[in-house]
Length: 255
View 1 (cartoon, rainbow, N blue to C red):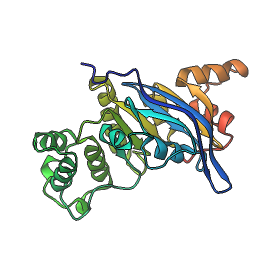
View 2: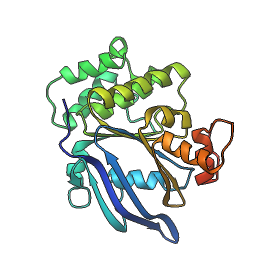
View 3: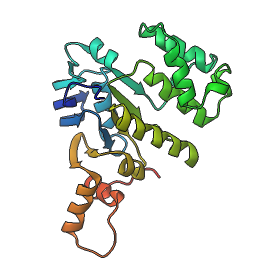
């Protein structure tokens, strides 16, 4: 069953943002199809975070238009906030509250009275046995699963994941990858993912864009971008997404 009635979950045109003398964004255009995983890549300071802040209504552009989940983000930011979930790099859970309490509180903020969604997410993310423990007793992987569950409590149309697997061990990272794939495949949820792990973007994202110095410098499917680079410099050596990234951004990402 398709959850969305719009073809483009995110449409941004001509985004410009300045901080004093710093040109953070210089005419960014972005389109994300509904029900897909989109990877936004770029070195620190390239404009990724500024772009996400504008898309999630935490900042207004100096110029340009933004539509998220069929809602004009500049005219109706509250409508956008109701339609999106955000999982930031920093933990969103109250460490002194239990997982259940964190989810119940978030549900109440969205006017949800039915507790079945809380129980569903606790089970889906393997937190049911620890549901009544304080979050500060959780491992890093458990805490990140709770963060994602909080972001999903209201069944958003678009989910923003900012470096979601940073600091996770390989098993926890693989579990989260599987959940991201399931959300897109089974729930047709649109996911915008920022990551420094290029193998993560290569596996999860159907489309990627590379941002550098406030501009989109490359976009396409991972395979398309690798094929373009291979055509430019034919070689027997395999081409990786890291090669593509270095060509367009010119700076290495964190391992």
